[in-house]
Length: 134
Image 1 (cartoon, one colour):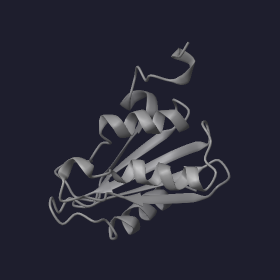
Image 2 (image 1 turned 120 degrees about the vertical axis):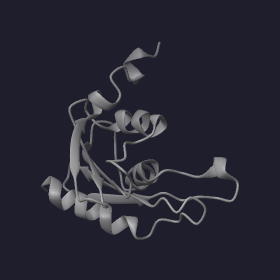
Image 3 (image 1 turned 180 degrees about the vertical axis):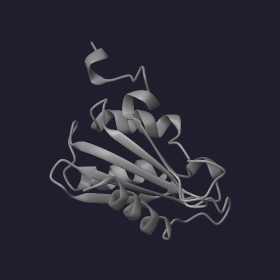
């Protein structure tokens, strides 16, 4: 799957985001090693701290579908912002758990149609990974 198709999946997912408080709708799409695409959206809550980002919701759905560490090949995130929206720190760490450092992350701004690409390692250069555990 190419980056354009993965971004399109993130944009389509974004339509289902539950964001009644911030109105900041985010969609994420994950390309798995076997070619499947799993999507997720942000889900807000009246208790703001309980909101969950699109990227982590997509990872949770992918784990349910059999995702294992190293199986995440690419990520796309789509939102309407002044520039491409980047995953938060928690999402970066979770993505790093399942993707190789060089996996591309496509950040798409639906407002102007622009997309930028970074690797997992560029977004989280000093990830805390299982090989650092005793």
